[in-house]
Image 1: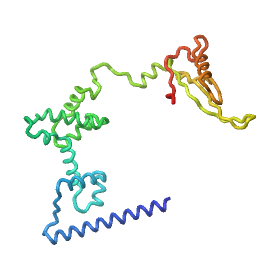
Image 2: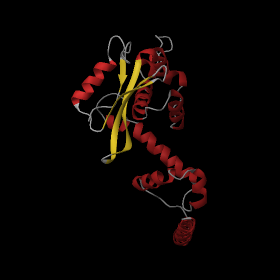
Image 3: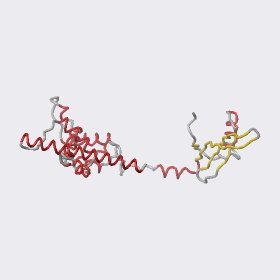
Image 4: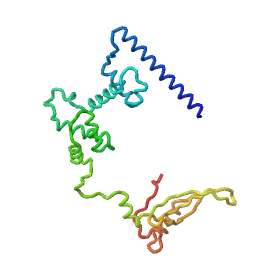
Length: 244
């Protein structure tokens, strides 16, 4: 596997070196023909090249790029992002152009909606890259107003961990596991139904059957929920797999 991986890596390096040399020759031919080495691309060509370039990153582009500088390619990509989030072209002549505040609000909501993991700090950085001068406080206020952030002055929400800790005493969980056992009829598989008390980690083996049926499970349920001696006495929540 190591030898194969090394061979694949050498093959990839050879391909990269060939493409770099081919680009150098094309640039030299272009310079001799036109007197300069500037290559003019249309919007579609810039988009294709920028989308591929951003996946490599600045450092790798410096190693393999031959036609355009990494800064140029990444600048094209930022322009594509700006065009994606800029709705001014779609407005046309339907009415007055939106104000800067409305544009910023729409951009913040669009970015937050398409990228749920982004906070106001990340959106602030993205807008700054696109040339928008807006404070992070403004972005945070917009997200608060539209319910995209928890209101620090509103009622505190209980975390899931805190909720579980406060309800441990009334939670139990149930499931099956299987065991193989030798019997007079040979090797058989038995299904073991168990219940665990989440707070104490105490386990109750509720039943062991090779082929449990509905009547057996109903009786197990009666035993577990017995008001006097049932294992689930005082429990309000039972966690279990969905029935198939």
